[in-house]
Image (cartoon, rainbow, N blue to C red; front, side, top):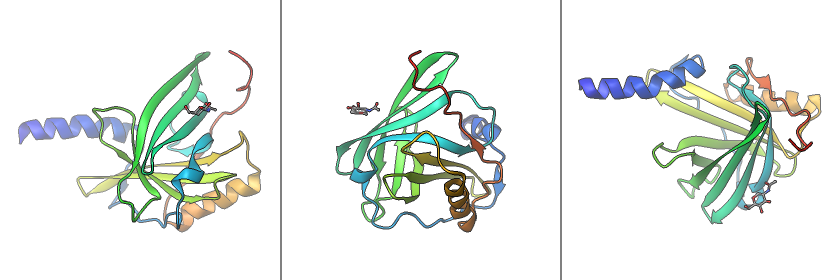
Length: 186
Ligand SMILES: *[C@@H]1O[C@H](CO)[C@@H](O)[C@H](O)[C@H]1NC(C)=O
């Protein structure tokens, strides 16, 4: 039991530090109906995100490639201190009846984190949400507004934030991601 506590605290604390936990269980937002994994593939730029922690890298983007009909290769990259950094992960549809609810893991030793596509038109924007219950007492969550282009019109951003809010997701601390000066060679 003691060991379990140490393990739980060790796993949970870094997550809590990154984000203020909310009391209660995760919300249960609606996700994209009839989600097509295939149409979602390709390059997505991060336009805004929760938590509003210290911003680290800039020019954050993710490239999804279909591996099987229910799994994908995920390559995320950012520019940090003038260097392009990449991490690779895998995503899976855990339940084919719920194709918009992916799990993504960036390491074999880490469990799959929820990666739910709340809404997407595949060609302009995608709204992604990830929430983890902790000891059933509270939850920590992450949210992203992704786009096929490095910028989005303000009206589109506002609409996106409203979708999160309508699903009881607090995005008041969402911050824009820096996507300036990304296309020049490093
Ligand atoms: C995305 O990944 C695919 C498959 O590895 C690759 O062919 C493509 O060039 C990548 N696109 C970008 C923008 O990195």
